[in-house]
Image (cartoon, rainbow, N blue to C red; front, side, top):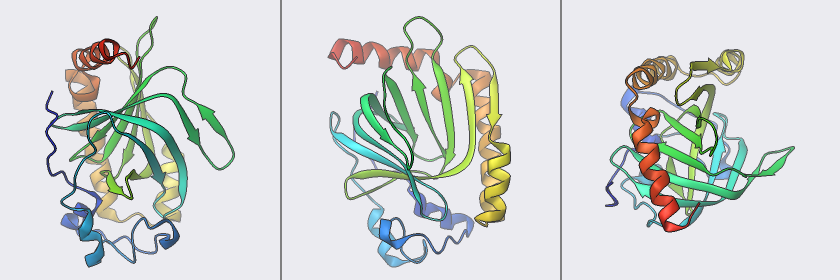
Length: 222
């Protein structure tokens, strides 16, 4: 595992596909006016948190609405393709509900792809993998942030690959006016993730998860 900080792509790289995203909630300081603003360039390049740092994670919708926040997430690894955080006894807040993470969860943030994934580490059964199709993460005010696109994948380490929330995704396409280029990118990402699932690579790699789990057991984090 490589713990060296390195420049990684942020949400602003959507401009490579000429995707304009406007009218996001400025009260959240998520994006201002559009991703073409010069001000947004301050997010790139950026410094990743030091390993062992405690931070928060915020998930937004495409219109800038903050819909979920995780508090007490620990940075545990900076890999070539992912930044990995640990959620254990972390607080999760939504508009109408709050809860505490019981079983340890590894939260993978892909550096150059349009997804992130949470993997629940279960002692007595297969690990549970939940993938969010989402923007590449970025960092603002010391908080990891991303935009969720309302289509997800459920999987067990040795189980099926289930794409869920199609109805929510289709509704968001219309309601939030997802650009065609973004929709196309998300379908490409689904193809990529299915290939990763079939070949047991990336977040679907049993070896990778076991190595991280062993590291966290040795460090006393879990």
